[in-house]
Amino acid sequence: MGRPKKHQPVKLVIGLIFKDINIYARAKQLLEVRFGPVDFESQVLDFNYTDYYEKELGRSLKRAFISFKKLILPQHLPAIKIIANRLETRLSLDKSRRINIDPGYLELPKFVLATTKDYSHRIYLGSGIYAEITLFYKGGSFCPAEWAYPDYRTDAYIQIFNKIREIYAQQVK
Image (cartoon, rainbow, N blue to C red; front, side, top):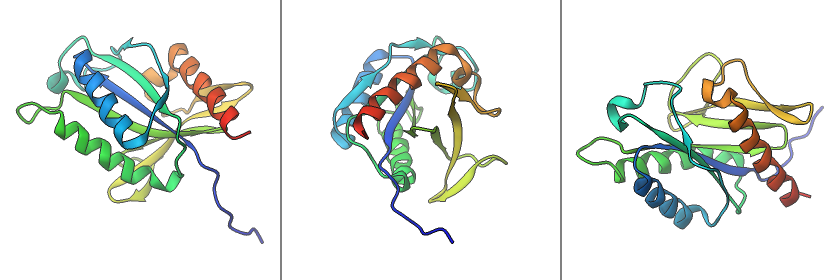
């Protein structure tokens, strides 16, 4: 019989989709107030994989990822997603979001993304929040799960998550 044990802390990673770099900077600042200093910030990438966000956020969208030095417990992901949603609302203008904030956590074998949308491959965590394993680590690199969004399948994103994994591996040595 297996015995339950405490889970090792994991690395908080947040993806942000935005049009205005100033909104991104403000969101990052507010996230740092809440979760502590950022230890990784990706370059700003073009986000042209879907038009899902265009009606609300506009065209010519950008994406960046940040991770935080302070590790979290995985069971805190639902509360963090709720905080992210509230921050999106706080940064809205005329009831329209200007930024999309997607938290997840990384551990050595996988990256788990939080969402409010249910689907067959997602697990309910509580408080209206679901999670999916978006990336898994195999053969020395992250690989996308079959249901991963198209942008998470790109080499640029894989390189970002591999770099964050290197930082995390040093933290949990």
